[in-house]
Length: 202
Image (cartoon, rainbow, N blue to C red):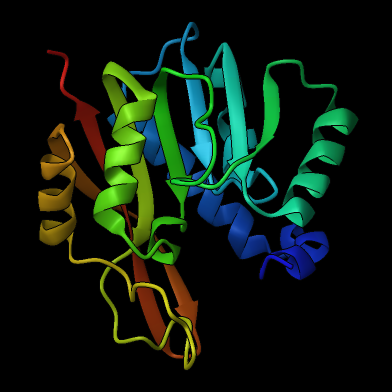
């Protein structure tokens, strides 16, 4: 079972997750020139909090995740809202057939730090974008491991300069960052960045 399957039914009960998604959506609107004709993909969408916040910005939005539990909750939400331009997809980056792109915008929230090979992930995301398309990655700034705690085997956030260099090596240009949200756990504060980069148009 995917580690997120058992969390899916209660995922939307946390108001911080809603606030975080709204803040990242606002950051994407501020940093990317969105147009209503665009096609977009969110990978690692979970129950679709960020995707739902952005769904009216796009002609079509694919929400992809590798957790059947999260996707089950998402499908119920799409049906309940009667949304026609959003489609759920079971997909894991780097495994299996890629979604039917190319996309004008690809975005994610708190997903990249769970993927072991960041360089490969960025290259795979570059391949999903149309030339000139935008990649929007929201994730943790580098931290000391206290955010997830003992036993976590992903990345403890990212140094922005290191991630920018990886993005450029994967074929992206015009890489820029902004701090869009801060999470709190106990007495600790964990900034969340939004990285926006473009696939080279040539």
